[in-house]
Amino acid sequence: MIVRTPPKKASSSAIAGSLQAEHDVAAPVSIHDMTVAYHRRPVLWDIDYAAPAGQLIGIVGPNGAGKSTLIKACLDLVPRASGSVRFFGNPYKKQRRQIGYVPQRESVDWDFPASALDVVTMGRYGRIPWCVPVRRKDRAKALHCLEQVGMADYATRQISKLSGGQQQRVFLARALVQEAQVYFMDEPFAGVDAATEQAIVILLRELKTQGKTCIVVHHDLQTVPEYFDHVVLLNMRIVASGPTAETFTSENLHRTYGGRLTLLDKAASAVARLGTD
Amino acid sequence: MLEFFEAVARHSLLQYALISGLLVSVACGVVGTYVVVRRISYIAGGIAHSVLGGMGAARYFQIVHGWEWLHPIYGAVLAALLSAFIIGAVSMRSNEREDTIIGAIWATGMAIGVLFIAKTPGYNQDLMSYLFGNILMVSKSDLWLIGGLDLVVIAVSVLFHNQLLAVCFDEEFSRLRGLNVEFFYLLLLCLTALTVVLLVTVVGLIMVIALLTLPIAVASHFTKRLWHMMLLGSILSAVLTTSGLALSYGPDWPAGATTILLAASLYLMVKVASRAIKFRSALG
Image 1: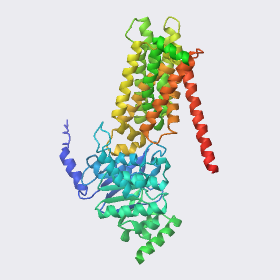
Image 2: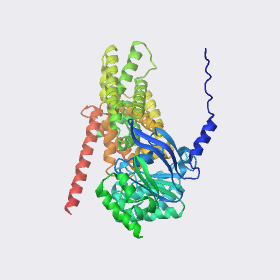
Image 3: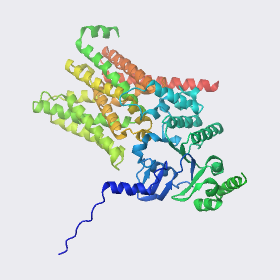
Image 4: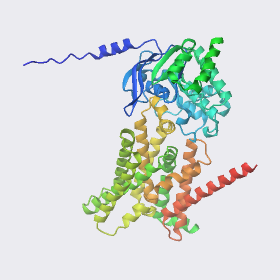
């Protein structure tokens, strides 16, 4: 009779140690071997990525490439089938305050009875203790963030009375008021007016000078070289990632978009512009 | 109308009715606002109808088995909270469609209630008051119960206002900020359940949704912030329940139905007036 001895279980500290080794502890965001599936259909495969600190990073890819899912999976909003994500070497729950998020504008009901200032103040809720009303200093911070996005004059206006661009700026202010180190933004430029687009670009550059990292899902290929230092080309897998000048090439774009020529034509002119800069 | 106020001064029954209407209005304004902005009035409808099961069962055990302490309102509270938990758990954890489970709870609760009421000896006056409400049947002890429940609902709503507001506006963002979204959604459903029980005493379970939502819908035309909506919603509910009671007194109409018709008329008037104002301003 053969008696099998059960294999020794690895101690939890050993597992934590090995996970740590797979992650870049210094990176603001480090993704290791991440796969995400909806109803057993994979939407993201084997994602490995370490975001460089203090950079503006654009996530680019065709519709259905999993750009928004990538952000949501990092933030534990959708379950991961495998893999892990670390922020400065720690899981999301331990770094919650350091991570800001700007969702797509359509994700909420803008008819909600709240003023712009109310919505921005919600960004402070993680810091306000239970059962305590919003403090004056939190309101002051929220107002300051509204000023930063050029919306101070609209602080008391009901959010349904704001234009699409103004609503987007309110969302940005709500993320800013968190005073985070890393910001995830899901298509902040989608459907906004030129003034708002400029305001967002100025804000992104200001965040960069403060040493903060911004990871932005972006759909307009033409503006990628102008707006972002780093780029991640995504189509279910990471096709290429790195500094925009080296990564945002027509070859990589072809591999990402797989022959969607109308989009690529636009991108080609952007790449050409990058070459002449 | 004058006749009504003279009668209030004379009859304690009318005084209790008036006080209970005013008490219930506060919870109605506060919780009704959450229900309207979170768009869960169909859940409130499901909970309201399931309450009949609890009331019917409590009344049965009270009469048949002599459990005098088991007031039908206790049965209502239990049934409403149980329904809220089931709907909440299913919508958060199960793959079952939420509307299916609401429909099931709606009908099952009523079926249980009808069965118990059929097996309870005596004239089924209770059934009618559960279904259509009878604010004039509120006794002094009921009033204490209503007051207590009212206090619980208002205290919890005020204490957790920030969290409930965040969960109603943006669930995903609340989760990221570290809020226990499941807990606060369940808490909101429980508050809705308790408010439904309070309103059942005034307008009966069939008409609860109207009283829970119509004053708030009217208030939403005049307010821009959540707590303003709660305040105006409470005032409007108080005015509607009081005037419903006053108007119905003379011609001996059912008070609940009168209140609901008043609320619906007010809503219609405000809606038509706001359309007319918009139309005129569009014309320049």
